[in-house]
Image (cartoon, rainbow, N blue to C red; front, side):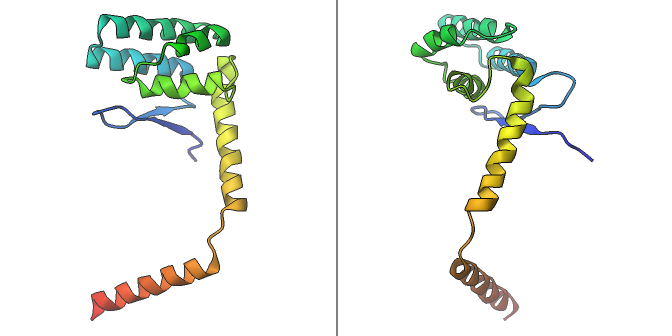
Length: 145
């Protein structure tokens, strides 16, 4: 049984990267490694690299200072690093705690809650279901005939 939760980070002009939350390394460490690898691949400008290093230094600390992080965000996040943007906004909006040891568990819990809400509140109306099944029947008959 594989209980591993996967997190996807989109990379521009790069294949999809999957980071495993329950691997030997916590998500925060994987994120920092991923951002450094991405920076090596795209060879950012000096200014962009300096900005990235500011964010990385902050994220590598035991408990990132959210007030300082907000100040960094005020001047923008490098567009070339969408994984950084995703985690920073979760911190700034307090979706994640500054305590990095809780990130994996919090993300897993929040995703479970979200999917439970989807099951409970998003239901396919009977008429739509009938139309969909009718369309499948027509397609099946067309393929056979």
